[in-house]
Length: 213
Ligand SMILES: Cc1cc2nc3c(=O)[nH]c(=O)nc-3n(C[C@H](O)[C@H](O)[C@H](O)COP(=O)(O)O)c2cc1C
Image 1 (cartoon, rainbow, N blue to C red):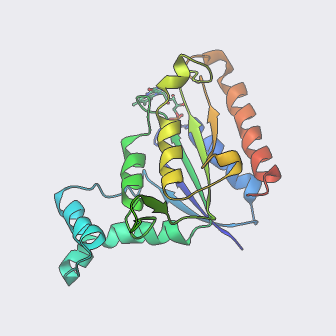
Image 2 (cartoon, rainbow, N blue to C red):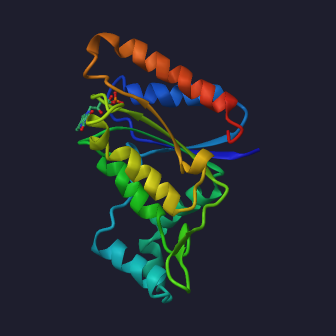
């Protein structure tokens, strides 16, 4: 059976983002092994001085680590193993300040690693090492970013799609990851339930109809 890593950041009570995750879990029940990384309970380590320099020593300078240095990276290595073992990634979060929440970015910073999820080619340039994996992004936003000029203010979608593409994720028509958004949840206060329910149906339809899932 395939393995799916569900990475979620849904800290608010009665989170609407969590409702999208629940729709995904219902739609895939018994069809894939789910591993859930809850970034609220288990935040990814930040790349502060010790973590970053130890990573650079190993991943970019190719040097052996001491046992103590290896221990420094143990949590990051665990996140990497979890990520690499999964065939599919579901990443769910609300938009914060036009982008992804800091906790989601911290997780991304741990899994984009030279020699693990991408490599620097001898002839120059980069190559993603995650070919064959697929990603589904579940996002909620307070505003409505469906059309310009607001669309250009959504930095979360291009950020995630660029990161996934950099690691070699590929879906249909060159789109590196499929994004399903429940948009306008603060803008259209009277229609929240309707928007969330419509988006849940989109999630269900996508999972049931897409040959990638
Ligand atoms: C700290 C913070 C920053 C936010 N920034 C934005 C934003 O830049 N654009 C936007 O459309 N909504 C923004 N929102 C609104 C949330 O994205 C929106 O309410 C979302 O649906 C919340 O999802 P949840 O119910 O899972 O918490 C922000 C909310 C919070 C708490």
